[in-house]
Amino acid sequence: MAKKGRILSGHRPTGQLHLGHLEGTLRTWASLQDDYECFFEIADWHALTTGFEDTSMLRENIEQVAIDWLAAGLDPQRSVLFVQSDVKEHAELHLLLSMVTPVSWLERCPTYKEQRDQIGEEKTAGYGFLGYPVLQAADIIIYKANTVPIGKDQLPHLELTREIARRFNNFYGEVFPEPQAMFSEFALVPGTDGRKMSKSYGNTIDLADKPEEIEQKIRKMFTDPSKIYQGDAGHPEECPVFVFQGMYNSKERIEAIKEACATGELGCVDCKAEVTEKLLEALAPVMERRRELEADRDLVRDVLARGAQQARQVAAATMEEVRAAMKL
Ligand code: TRP
Image (cartoon, rainbow, N blue to C red; front, side, top):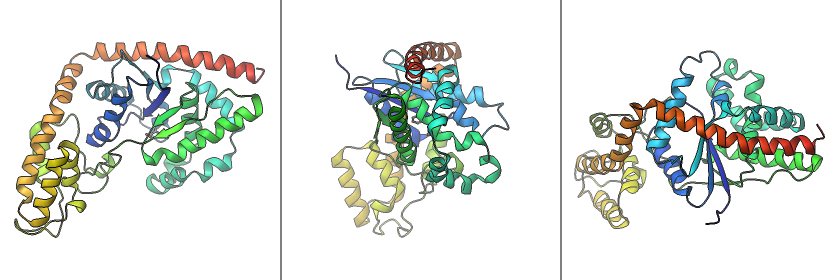
């Protein structure tokens, strides 16, 4: 069967993944595997751009991400799952792209400014951090990916990727296609406090959590603050628990819940009990598979070793073209 094109996406190894990753990213990636030729990268060099001081957890974090990916249904029979630093060609392309990338493009990048404000000057003062988007561009175009499924927060990086590819092509001839972004359905999964689910906010439901922990986290979860007593009318569109309901129910049931919350007929305690049950049901196969993989690290390492081999073949072929185009 002819595929619709090639996909590359990636994630920094930040440790165990949470529900936001699963519903916002991984389920979308998994659903693309039949229609596209897929490359999924664990971007460990990107993690170093801000996490260079203490690297003691890096190896373990890489394996945790791989376990979560496999548990969520990324399938090494259909996709290439690999670790960035296993494919040294990315570093060579990053270097060559850095020659054609004006520093002003990088300083202008909104994520650069945001991160500086958020995590401070000290950790973001490095040359490597400024070049973060150049490395990401190399990740994408070394596979000549046409489509990049990402969160909206990554859009500035994809735009830079397109500009860098265009500039390279202008100087040396058409080597790289310009990739397109693809967004997933549940791009913004709220955390238990109603803000975006994020490890840095401490509001996550992790794929490695035990069912009791999840039950407890949902019981304490933030809801519509104007609904205090059972019987008060709620505002489901402002409630993160309702977002969860939306992820795990049929259209009809979602409408019924919305109506019952708005009229006050449905209280938060019952609503949370229902969503917990649905969530645990949806997570059960992922958790089960996670446990199996935790117990079989050799399998996980094997998958990554095989993925690196497959990725390297494609990346090496592109680098041949790049060197020829640049007359190196
Ligand atoms: N910057 C991405 C993130 O933080 C991770 C990443 C690295 C990536 N290389 C990529 C994403 C290539 C898409 C394509 O989530």
